[in-house]
Length: 412
Ligand SMILES: *Cc1c(COP(=O)(O)O)cnc(C)c1O
Image 1: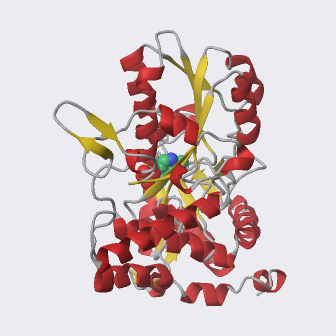
Image 2 (image 1 turned 60 degrees about the vertical axis):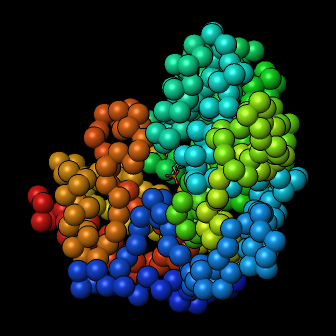
């Protein structure tokens, strides 16, 4: 296969064997899983870590004197270090375990309540997932700050010059995704971070959709906050990471009160624990955190350059084939994009296409993809979204394109 010969380091057949679910049949057909932007599949290496945890060292962490607790604590803290290395954080305690991207954003948005005043401005991009819109709207309601939206163009690219005009010394925080989940657009986050900093504003980057494809270096980016979910990068659901610069994490108040996040408690006064525990109240998803570390290690063993190059080839191949279909409209045509194709076929409802594809064993997403403002921009109710991962193949793209053609024939 040409893709494997071009990327000798990348053995697709071997990689596919790591994912047991890829052997499944759906409605009598071998599964073609193209809903990776919603959640990715889990390799055996990560499944083994989960089984090992519950089989051999399930215990609560940080508090126990007994051996199992110490073992679990060590593995959990090692996972934090895997994440620190992967994202190149300066300090391991700048890595906070969360339940996912949504939790990370809410933690920061809530923390800013005491830092904002009426008339302050906060900037969001037009390309956001609802989870990076709603918590900030709630923040504006509480503080009287004003939410301003950086517009996008027809290609699905942010209009940088508009951002340059909007950002000012009134801007307190700018938050946007690294990659759009609905369109795949890669945003120019480094330029945005530098420009925002020149006005003294903080920047939060929602990295949920970038993390499976791009290795972000938080120090090189000089970003203040970077949030991700494990389940989009080969890990389990219910766990994620918030990276925060030490100075910010020290300044922000705790998000939840409870066990683990305190230094001392009395009814008169409670003092908070040091980082990272200040933001990790209660018993965390211990197994999930350990498995998240294993997932990041697994992806690094394949290599992010290999992943990016291979996925770009799949993207180009699939885009070319889809555009041969009459009535095909692809949304999100930025030059800088990940392997996500959002599309509609003239006169057909995305839901009907998705349903027929499922009958052929092909999993795609249909709907607004938790990004209704983007759909409103294009004046459509939703799209069909195929999102690719490094374990997909050209043969699967062929089956998908044939499936779309068949669905079109059956529906027209
Ligand atoms: C998936 C996603 C989220 C939400 O992640 P959860 O794991 O559901 O918390 C936020 N932003 C983007 C860009 C996403 O793709």
